Image (cartoon, rainbow, N blue to C red; front, side):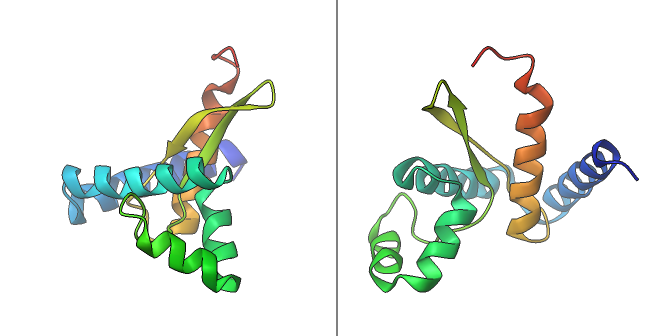
Length: 116
């Protein structure tokens, strides 16, 4: 299975998981926390999760931030010309690592169609 097929399969599994377990409000709330973490710390939300595991001060800061609350994987930064233009996030896959992989694949899929 090539990378494109793998990403399509992952996206399909994610959509099925979202449709069966979460309502849209829950998904949007989770996505918002992931985007907030990525933008605040200027790195993917997965990188924020990893740093928070080894940095008690950062972990406490994240928990105290009402826009984040809990660091979760799934958001990646949209970069252009060395600047952060925004963030793109996915939620609903069985595991945040899959959310983030799916977000990266989604962004990669449209990167050549968007002028960064």
